Image (spheres, rainbow, N blue to C red):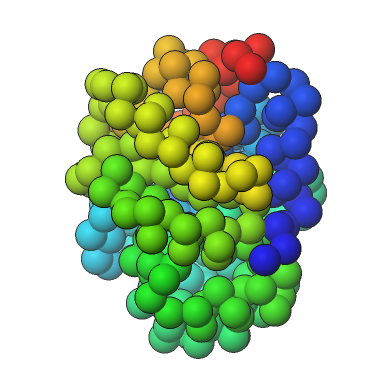
Length: 274
């Protein structure tokens, strides 16, 4: 499968700068559409190479309390797949070189129709799609729809992934695979790096240079990001960023300045690791 040009370039640029790519997840339309766009633009401006736009859905079963709450805030503001696509288009216009990945669940995509969704995602300027509950070895329909529009399918791998599942994910991947560093839901802190490091090395050996490996779940500080950066091609931060929005919304303040500082601290933390 052909990798998205922008996503591939983001990883290539990071390698040239002797660091992993920095990937930041934010839920679309949280706490509202205008602020969500400002947050994502700020994250790119502060050093994020790739933004994962979380598509709000009513049953985010793989996510912890922070992202579940973000999705519910977004849904209350009218968020959903169509609004996420519109937000993606706005972000693409503002940040033409950023990598943009739509991150969500299968149900809204299947309701829209995979072919229709893929065309709309392409037109919105997305580079790829990560679908939490769409295993790469279960059904090729979504992957085929995305491939026809030049979009990456980003598979998830976990500590429990078998060699067969790893090979299927690598075969389906474009620019990168997302390795979930621990079992369970999002939001927990990553304590032990030995097991993720070993698993990533195993995946890299099977990948044989075909795709990059991003690592997420549990990365909450610049120090943790730097530790993961030593063995990952990309570092993904989600819940810690979403919690900034949650705290600001509860306090009635603008979350953008704190988000800018946080993302900049992550980018500084991973500088020069490679």
